[in-house]
Image 1 (cartoon, one colour):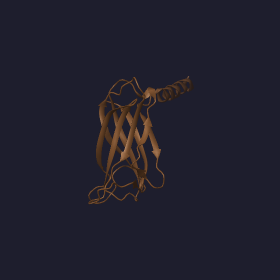
Image 2 (cartoon, one colour; image 1 turned 90 degrees about the vertical axis):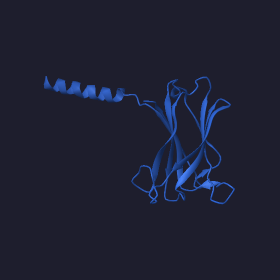
Image 3 (cartoon, rainbow, N blue to C red; image 1 turned 60 degrees about the horizontal axis):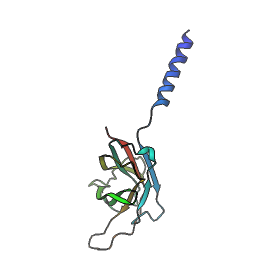
Image 4 (cartoon, rainbow, N blue to C red; image 1 turned 180 degrees about the vertical axis):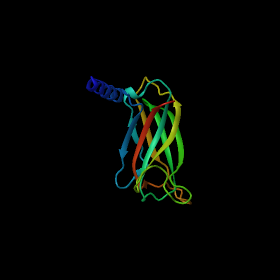
Length: 162
């Protein structure tokens, strides 16, 4: 009888763990050796990610010690079919004032999860594309930086608004 109770408890735990639906979507694009360029990185969202409910959108960056700046400027867009429904110029801190990288990670690679949109409801009638490009410039140089070494990957996360 005791063995049956243990088996039932074990089955209930396994069922509850496997029945949990993961809330959210994350996708990455790995950068080539030259790093993040000015050409946008595009993410086409699967239809099941677009729920019609409020969602939060995050940009995810992984950098290493080759990244030469303490901040980053990004151009982020949301496209619904051919229509641009949102375009933002964003600035994020990548390092603290003492030079330590922000983000999580135990080695020289750090991952930053950066807020982009809060409580956005994505339209369901067209394919949705999220585009991210860098827009960095060096002080006194009117031309933008063409490539950001040290940015290893760029990603997006979409999570249910809670």
